[in-house]
Amino acid sequence: MTYFAPEPGQHLVAAGLEPGRMSYLAVRSAPMGAVGLVGAGLDALVSYTATGRGFVVPFATGSRGWSQEQWNAAVVRLAEASSMPVVP
Image 1 (cartoon, helix red, strand yellow):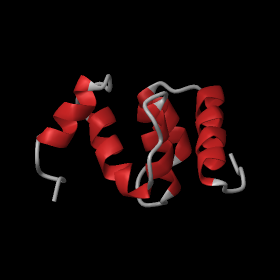
Image 2 (image 1 turned 45 degrees about the vertical axis):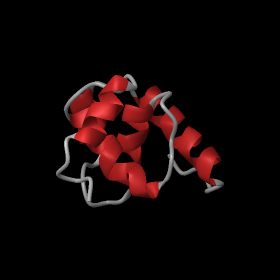
Image 3 (image 1 turned 180 degrees about the horizontal axis):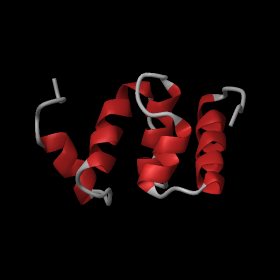
């Protein structure tokens, strides 16, 4: 189980993610599928928010500093990667 192990977070930081919440969310969303490193922090947050078990979009964008345009681009990027319909 990697949830409590420090190594996954260390690997993500070495790959370019910011330590803390960004790598935490990336590790938590890993079971949902690969998102790549471009926009990985935002993609992880969008994926996590889409589960309905965490943040709501206004809080997620406002508290993390992502613009609505960046959020919508991540939604489209994730939908295209998974062949799911786009519903920003």
